[in-house]
Image 1 (cartoon, rainbow, N blue to C red):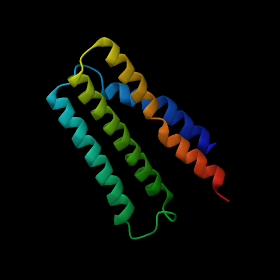
Image 2: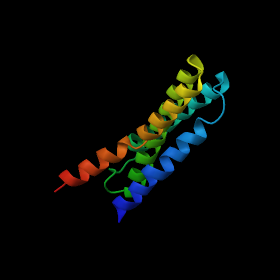
Image 3: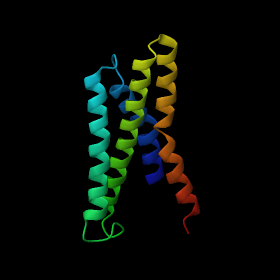
Length: 121
């Protein structure tokens, strides 16, 4: 059941978040926002991971929040690169391809979770 929930989260919510982040024309302010968003998400995930006194396996909620923040940072990086490329190469065809590849890129962490679940004893 948990893997099904993760599947829906990654394959539906992830591309929707990416689409919301890359909506509109790429401006300098938007690129700065995406960069700060990715850095803050990653820093918060690391703070949770290494700042807790107890190990993450004892506190599963914090482990889940940390993974969620790392995933959001990943989506932020994808959105930042997408908008930077769109700014450098304006064009409808390039915009379409970056949208498709970026949305697909948000799902990459699912394969790592699924593989780890398969290999777990």
